[in-house]
Amino acid sequence: MCDLMLTYGAEHSELYGYTDADSTLQKHRCAISGYVFLIDRGAILWSSYKQELVTLSTVEAEYVAAIHAAKECIWLWHLIGKLFPLLITITTLHCDNQVVLMLATQDNYHVQTKHINIYYHFICKVITSNVINMVYYPTNNMTANI
Image 1: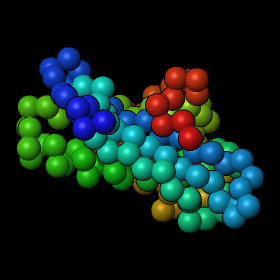
Image 2: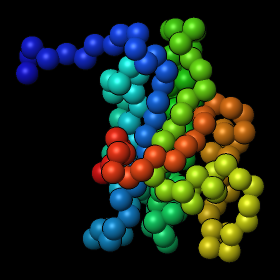
Image 3: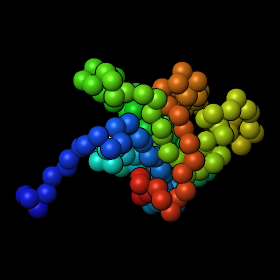
């Protein structure tokens, strides 16, 4: 393994993110979230962790995972912007749940999601500020699939 290394070229210089959650019934009742961020198809930041709250649906678990990925994305965005000012553009965050995408990008009210704390609607502001462009990405191709 000591002969292997990450190399970054000029092929795909944008920052891309992938977010996912596994909300199947865990013994601890908390979903497992994950995200990964890539530049030039090479992972530069990734995480997998147990969510701190019990979610009531798969949509909510995926939404919470997307929020945490968005916060990391903003941190990366600022760091990369200072190191490589010409590299940074709007970041695409891939999500494999179309309802989460709709919740984050459209200002709509749902009876099933009215209990989600306002803290978790932070991602809506990030998207409208053009820091993140959230798009659908199929589960079978999801890089962050748990």
